Image 1 (cartoon, rainbow, N blue to C red):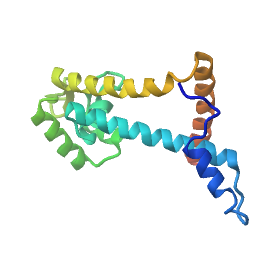
Image 2: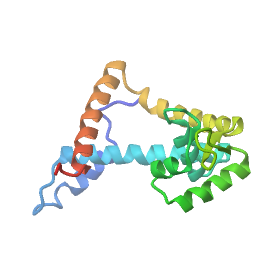
Image 3: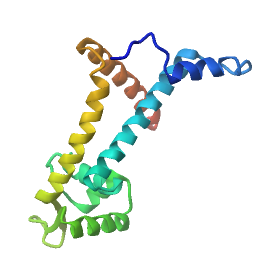
Image 4: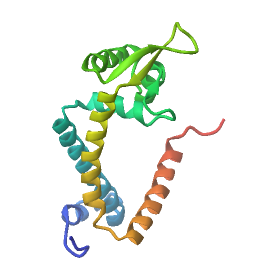
Length: 176
């Protein structure tokens, strides 16, 4: 278990840069918070890549399966809804779906509401490989978070939500 009194990369970074910003406002605490969040994001991105490599998924395959599984109706979506969620073009979505279908992880089915439309459905093999990747990701996330007590987790979750809401408000267009 780590202690909060030992220096981390961010402490060294802030100390190194503090005196270089004489003519620019430099708040040690803001820099430390943002830098630590960035370090955690990079850690989780790296461990996700490792998990995907271990189960044999490419990142785009995982993201597509993930967005398919976290829907209101898990494992089912229209190609256009998935494309919108993933912020990719319809043509890009078609290419992804072709590859996922060839791998046996999804299947296309005629929509029960409109036979001209196609819906996407995850297969058992697709759900299994997604779950294996999620399990590996979850282990690495839990390994970091278990450093905190339950009270610290509750506090951190509340504080991160507050920061997330501020970031989302800053991103949303002003009301007309």
